[in-house]
Length: 183
Image (cartoon, rainbow, N blue to C red; front, side):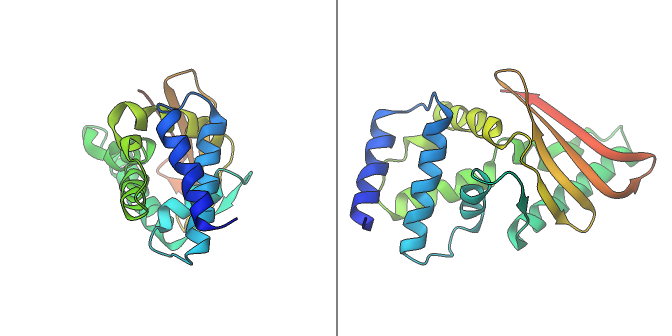
């Protein structure tokens, strides 16, 4: 199967199935996206490629790009634990829950390959995120940075995201950090 066939499949998916309503729509999008990137030998979209891989593995080792994101999350968590009055500590983890870095790379990918891009509109993106966190539930990222042993999304009610960050060493009295939000 060539790039034109993959593009045609992605075109059809993005034109006829938004907002996504089933997990298989998201998995199919990411699998076909990965095929497209592989055919081009493209390394331009490392976070998009990470999610393409993560959605089909029961656990995942980290990459340099994900390590950088997780270090920022860890710094914010430590700041919040050390000073609970600072509620800005969750900024990076909230961005990660909404997959903002993935959204930016997905938008650039769609533009580059001239694919329909209503996927990145707010309604369509939240539908994708809510399904993707279900797919990724209990599929941890192992050792995403030296300070974090694992990062996991957890099963949650419809419209919610829950997760857990397990630390390599205690942060104060804590061995882990739990997070959640509703869409």
